[in-house]
Image (cartoon, rainbow, N blue to C red; front, side, top):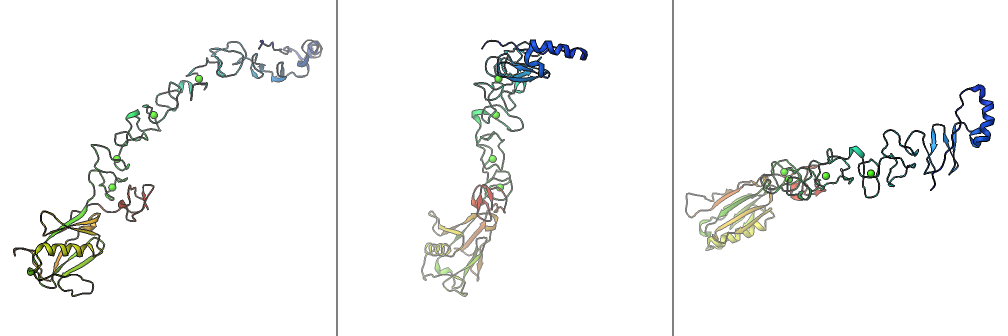
Length: 343
Ligand SMILES: [Ca+2]
Ligand SMILES: [Ca+2]
Ligand SMILES: [Ca+2]
Ligand SMILES: [Ca+2]
């Protein structure tokens, strides 16, 4: 495109010669006659304000002494007579390239001197992102690049790993239930997994048990009373024995009775010692720490062999209330963990 000459209206020094000058100028300058505040932009028909000129290489008005006028003014690295970006000289009269403050081909961003490893636009004119290995201040807590990991010190979302974020940091945390409170399936420090209450009962042969003897067992929600041979209350769980049941058989009948009682306790017979019934609460928590009570004179030591209850004990943790962070239904009183929050 040929370089366009632009016309300037003659500066009028004195009002007294306005009329005379106007006639002369009318002949010489055409359009300026009736438009003393602007120049005619020849290529497009645009009228520019008096302090503007038509850009020589683009149909736009630009500051008379500024970028786009085709001549190098103060602070300009180039001036190609247009305000087009990406053609070697950008619209701010800085050479096209990363760091000139204008986004052109191949650049995602360009904040000029504000490009920074800690800012929104990196020195290579790429947008700051989580995972680029640069710490975007005010947005990211950390960024270890490819080493970002949900089991490491910097999470994949560029936040510092912490107890309560729901991720188990390897070698540091034992668990993480999405909160840093004592409630839930993990302790407040993420150092110990909440446990269910456990217990056991060592059984004796049927001949050592008197009808009506038994034990009370609770799961944290309710108690059941278990009686051997004969029940005294309607609510009792009756465990029917044969006179010569061995300790093993008594154990099996007892375990079956517990498992069928409705308590949230699982009873098993330990393989290497069949007279022992092991008990585990189905839920974690201190609520299950409910001591097994013998009833009706069923004897514990010193008689040998003896009927020995142990526990229930060892339960730790408790369920979180509404609004507390969680990772599983087991963390919540409501048994509802939605979007990592107890309902
Ligand atoms: Ca640029
Ligand atoms: Ca980053
Ligand atoms: Ca964590
Ligand atoms: Ca917790």
